[in-house]
Image (cartoon, rainbow, N blue to C red; front, side, top):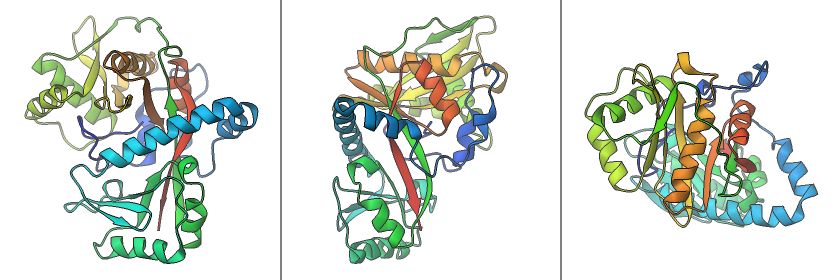
Length: 314
């Protein structure tokens, strides 16, 4: 699950790494081995190969949705960052941080870069003292990976892209003793920030100043859901969703307090956020899953693997 600043997609958590995606509960019975799969897949997930061979019609629809998601990411990633065109690449840079998750490029659909264009991309990041890095959907630019590997890049990992729609999204009951609701009070918005900071291992406790920023994000179209303990009234889980754009909405930043994991709260949040996105006008809510534990959670909620995001750097 991707962690980004609540509201418009502008950055990932400054400490986010693949191992830290493992904080999300896995409420499956008797199987915890997949929780050890950081730092993610370095080869394509087998579900993609099976689906591609067995369902050519679905492959066409899958490619169409992946292309929409890649176009969406190219549109929102430069927000709040410096950016420039380098051949067939859109390169983005955070001027204030060298965090690799805030500095990366994406190729154009169908791009086939020359060795010179790959070298120019490397130089664009070197001049800014940034690590050359890309995050993109390989289905949309199949020739890119080999061109980058030939240019000295190495695969960091692959996050699964999962999507759902009104037909597939589950409608399971709320976890026992838990109420899912849209956060409206200051305490709920602050509780949301606290539980997400805990889940994603952020340093320190969030300031109460974050409440105003979260209200502004909601006013700009972001969506949010919190899980509240019916007995104590405490926020014990939370998730958010980007504003709907071109029928797409990314579900992200789902986190659950340590003592409330393995109770189905993570999957329930994914379902509820997906339904909120559909009500807000999305036709394809989607998310990223870092490993098979997350994949199982979201499959039970009605999401299906349709592709992957490749992280590759030099």
